[in-house]
Image (cartoon, rainbow, N blue to C red; front, side):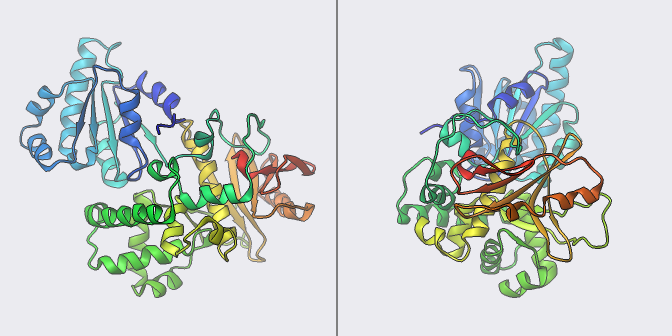
Length: 408
């Protein structure tokens, strides 16, 4: 089942301005499917995954581009970065011939952000518009219109869900192949087992020299077990039986591959009382559930990690709401040395918006008691939100309200 992706409008804006449009993201988030679904009939699709195609492109890139002229889609461009300078030359020629028509000529997808972005910045500076694509969002699955999340936003056309329906989405995760299906536990497990094997065999080897794949798998599991928690490299390294430098290197790989998001404490005008440790969030809670052994939505919902998964899923959904609109959000969290914490702080238009996540169907004013601590940063405070399982949007106190988690 194809679900309309919210990134389409932002992608259209990119194509109307830049000659090259690049969509980057983790494996299996639907990059090539998205582009092929929206492409005009005259746009050719070329996958750069097959080794023979890679060989042709490397050996004679000019001939390869001549045989695959724009408008064209080059899928997984990170496999042949040698093409980028020749795409640049083709773009420059098209601009000279007809500047108004030299828009959206090349559509590219890529999976490895660091190496790919280095090549793009060197070869296609000023010529390429870049968008991130994440897994399916809750709003996309519900068929709702996109809007960047803010606590004071207007809620419309919300599809109410029970707690087990929410945790079913959390457990399934956001990869389109599994998020749009109705998988049983065996199908779900088989998908993620295959995903990890492919990821280990291809992407990790492409990004770094991993001496022991079993150790890296242990590290993946240890990282997943810490989703929604402050990062402790010493503990993470110990559980994976690796050194701290190796743990930092592996975590960098997970960030580069868009598997994890590190959320840093808000630090403008930082005081001595603030912590500096980031929080770790797995961006796909289905993958995290597989790695940590939760075999059903019910087990996850009633388990010890339910609150952490609830928070990570919420952070990822809010992140998608911005990225799908073509925006780069400024996300942080707040924690001081007295352990006062706010799960998410959104900085937008000169204001700070506090967001707290609570896996419960009830709330009280005390759930928002730390929101005013953001005033120490001498910035205007926007509305605050408690995201919970309580089914109705309702004021908790002045300038703070409950938002049902299914509204994300």
